[in-house]
Length: 289
Image (cartoon, rainbow, N blue to C red; front, side, top):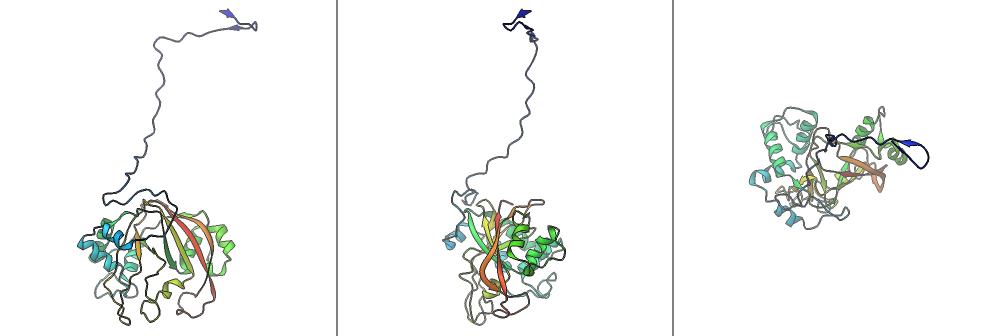
């Protein structure tokens, strides 16, 4: 024993010669994403969310197969799908609506739908840029999210923007279906005189601005060969399709809720009629599925 300067006796314990450092558990780390995918689309973008330019070059870079191009064209066909061509169709909605409903509800699919699903999934790649996409939807879109937050019998059209923001900001959710948006806010969509007038999209109650991360899996279907029977022009919406979320992955994050500054009509009324609603804009950040 030795006596310290304070007068207290200190004891130094000898370390046994066979003592070893305890094992340190090393947590497995997620592998870093490659800089680009096999088609050359980047997985990271240092820029803020921005509009996409050079759509033609972007489309060509995808190098889609014939089967993928056919699936994309079927998916973007705006015509109502008849049961004569697809037994799984309800005769009220387009091919994309029928497919996404079947996916989200876990319903049986026709062979045509299964083929379309397979080819679209095969065409997905990194978005490649942090981009903005725009989509317009009816109040039911918000009502479903409000219900998931415990709101009974919600009606977003009767709620103030401050009420909606207090409930929705920060909410995350997944989408078990394909989600499409315009990369140029429907700039190329057909206007007055068209069977597929872009006001049918833009006058809906909800404007969704998606802020899409570069590593989100998506694809650009390109220009449809479908022509408007009234104008003879092609129905090019400047569209990008995002792939479905993996099970349990809530990769959609609501970061803002505000007024868009536009007017809207209730679901079921015609364009330019009963424009009594103030359109709600929600900003949704989309992370990798």
